Image (cartoon, rainbow, N blue to C red):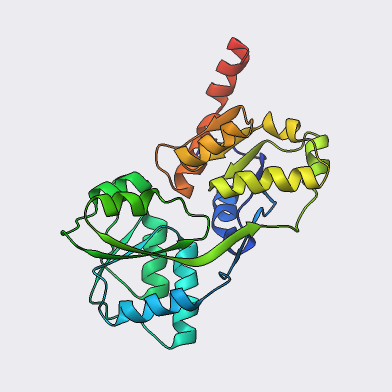
Length: 270
């Protein structure tokens, strides 16, 4: 294993309930995770549409269950327990945007044989899902979810039921990042969603920290949409892994901090 991350202090902006996976990977690479949760996952204001859709799903009224995050899976698990329903004996097919979400589907919902696109992107899931004309798709998601997936599935002839499964709100608590930034004791930031980028900027500004000092740091973003949000927010050293997973994110950081790359950076002055 490369020692490029050894001793690097890297900020984890994920919600507290989902931060452990990234923290463990950072420690495995000898880095020091700095907790700075910028998101909090809460139920939607109105749970009735989600409960109705879950009852319709178990009654066989959908052909596909499409899941785009582990947060959505966790939200379904909570409501299924409240409603006394199970998805283990499904009469539909299930798709997930990536392996982490698929693993959560298996662990929390008891569903095997999940369809995962070759690229872990919304576009890939929308374009390559094996849909039949008129397929009925249940798409639970965050209240902040972009409409791209539903629009593309609809354009392919599907009838898509989009339901709010949870809300993402800006988080708080843990750590004094402002002081660490002031002392230049942070080496990189990690973002796994556009919401995390926006809430990071909002939280940092609210705490009176220098956003400019943060913008100078390496911002490791899990995918191109998150990276675009980071660039729009003024981050100048944005990196994106080839594989849009936490493992890929760590590899991108490892490559960025590799001794060879750092030597090249010093040589060309960038």
